[in-house]
Image (cartoon, rainbow, N blue to C red; front, side, top):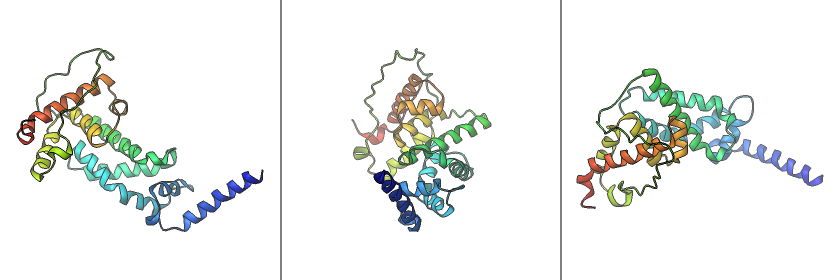
Length: 219
């Protein structure tokens, strides 16, 4: 009984100490916990969280919607949703992935509203196969950062190549290669089958390799 009381008291004391620390001195984990306390998120703590992750959101939306002029408005809406829902985040250590899913889902919501079909690059239609029949254990030929991202010119060409992919292909390759999400997560976010996700990623990689071949040498 005394151990239980002691543990509870330690938790309370820990929260008091955390609340005395300036937000910019807190870890991301403690920042999120502070935002989850009270009726509404602590505004100062939330502002610090936004400062730390704003670049991440901007970068993700930039890759998902490079030709949209209102990405700043989209980013603002992302943080509004984060503010409203941060108390629902049960695993603070997974905040970055949760934030990425909010940004991506918002992008898809907006895409559906616009009903736009972006297809600047003509690709062959994906193979029509039943889910489960594809065993994609892909060994990617996509250029590795250590080998091929040495020059600013290559970075720019890579950015343009990704931007010119059809919407669906661009989204899956960004979520996989830039966000590092699992295939299953991408399927859930995009609302397509696992086989379709794997097919799109493979074809996007192949297209990028083809476009960037002059920068990749003979490998």
